[in-house]
Image: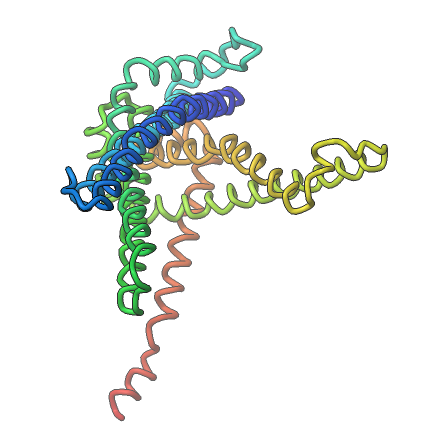
Length: 351
């Protein structure tokens, strides 16, 4: 559905606008609150006077300010992405359960929004918007907390003597745990928003449905997602290579025609490709994001109403079952390769 790509880019544009609105406010707060607190502390400390706040209190206040700033940034951007995900889930759900809505003509031809997409977008912006805000708030709290803790840890490490190997290992373990918590919260939120867009449930009810789905067909869902994610990454890498080739051809054409004053030609070669990659990767990733959401929606439809999906598209169900069987077979082969064979085990016991 081209309309889902349009909604995805619209959500990305809204997230960019939110960042541009957030940035001057964040700079103002940092300059007039954080830097003022530290300047006042160091000035009183240098004069030998008793400071209003201790160093630990100033650090705690600054950490709270950073946390609230990051929370507002992550929450706004996650809401924009959540609207896109819920819209994609609602449109795919209508394709499965109400197929006659897909064949309706598009009233907004310029935006490529058919009624199935526009109705899903309207639900995401109205009845489901509260669930989107609540679910993304939970994820934003985790993301902001992880970013703040990492910032405090790196700042303390930079102000102290070099750490020994045991403390470095502890820091690595803490980073891994924080990243795992953040990824788990993000994955849980993505699946819960699919339930919200598919059935119009609240976020809490969608969360309980996700837990039930994991208990019912957790490994099958994970296997199918693992088969789709590399395809998305390969598509992103392919588009990046095409973009870099087009940039090289553009630079050669501009240089051939003598336009050496062009900004693109004046940039050093590594910066040209870095700029092209910085522009290409987000654009391609946003365009492919409805693919992952659609895959999650179809897997939920298959897990809960496979007979409906089978009537709608039997070939799709066969592919899902083929991917499921392939994942199960690969899992059995991996487990059998790790387990020792019977003669070897007996030989070990005899020795």
